[in-house]
Image (cartoon, rainbow, N blue to C red; front, side):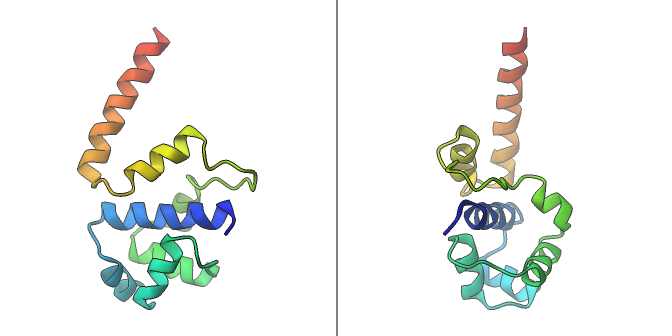
Length: 113
């Protein structure tokens, strides 16, 4: 599947886990089948805008916010550092993500001085 579909799937997984929802719980809230959520998260399904709208509503995020972090280029970008970081963080809960963000922010600020 192309990188955009994979990016969407990764972002859905990160948001779902940050809300501490199972795939089944998200599917119920979004009124879609649980296996559909799994296929999206694995980058196996190219979902429709309508389905994405239902999912983002269930995740309590709007489409503009959702796409603000999605890589839209179709070049081979899977090994860019930020994508590798996102893949690492997809199984980390939101509290740990916030702690890691603060650490990264401090490193970036330190490098600027």
